Amino acid sequence: MGISRISALEIFTNSSDLEITIGQEKGGGKFLIGIFRGPGHNFKPILTSGPFAEKFEDAVEAIGNTLTSIHDVVVKEFSNPSSIPSQYLNPGGHEIDQSKILNPDLISRILNELRQHKVASTYKMLATVG
Image 1 (cartoon, one colour):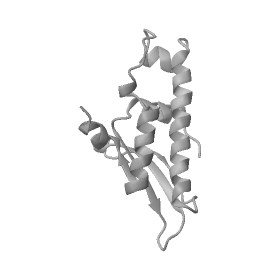
Image 2 (cartoon, rainbow, N blue to C red):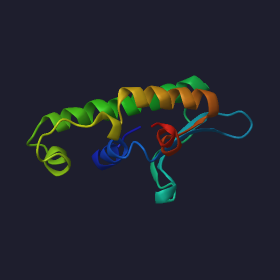
Image 3 (cartoon, rainbow, N blue to C red):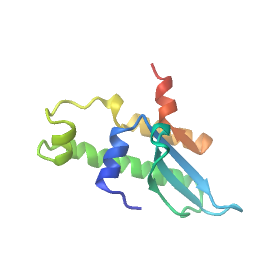
């Protein structure tokens, strides 16, 4: 499952406005995943898959690996002041506010929500945090 740089940046920088879902084919078939923007963007799809996972936990793991990879790659981009994302989104080279990006704690919360509800809505999760 590939993801474009712009989609990775959209997920990374809009972590408080995402809906992440795990679906399943009818009749107990394979699982599929989707990452969408929140209701303010009419649940615009950012990343979706066809049915691929035999087990629910494999779909959760795929989302975890995807989000962790996005985090790692984009953080690395931001550490290079000459990278285009860094110049555009952080031109002063300031420390990034972890509460405004996709971070390891949020990834963990997303995965826990998925395991419980098959849906993780960060716009709801983060709205309840002080």
